[in-house]
Length: 281
Image (cartoon, rainbow, N blue to C red; front, top):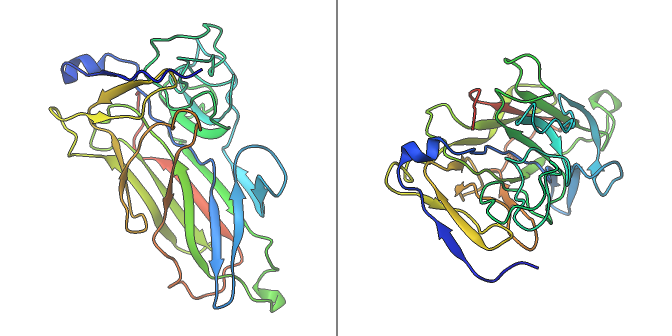
């Protein structure tokens, strides 16, 4: 049961915060590609990380560097890959009500960090990329997904699609005070030039004196931290990245600016997620 009592933890100084186990987390619980024309709007591509099947993976052709977390909780506290309930680093998990991480340390009512709660579904996550278990080369912090198959390629003479927008569910929690902290999301249509989708960088309005208050954890405790991350290049609504919502476990959905200006028929879409800087939070 989730407590209805809400308390707040407030940082004393930025120096104290730097000593905490902080978290950077990207998740793509739903990467949705939508096409539009004068008559219909239909979903073209989807990846929920819940496994195969059109309800979870629609028109996904391939993915590169999307490995599942191996569960080495003590040896490798970070991750760059797929995590799920009972198999994720403690830094990623909100263990305040349930042992979400599966680390073996059980429930911790004092756990105020971690964006994945007891109702959060599998996702692609990043935390402490300097100390994670499934990328052995420090320079490789990029993952790639490609969708297609909604029609044959251009040589067939069939019409491709006009991509209206790209949607992603994204969350993060931590103190991101480095100028290069954050990550970027890019897209290629028909394997042509790379276009920006989202740029995620530290939010300067929440600085050394003004913290951001995150959603309450599953136990009802709110946490305030300096320098959260902010999403740019959304569909008219930039936003501060937050942790999951207690009860539902959901993350905020962000919608890209429209790509309907790209009028060349699209036969495949490639999305790339890259860490801007090797981080240790």
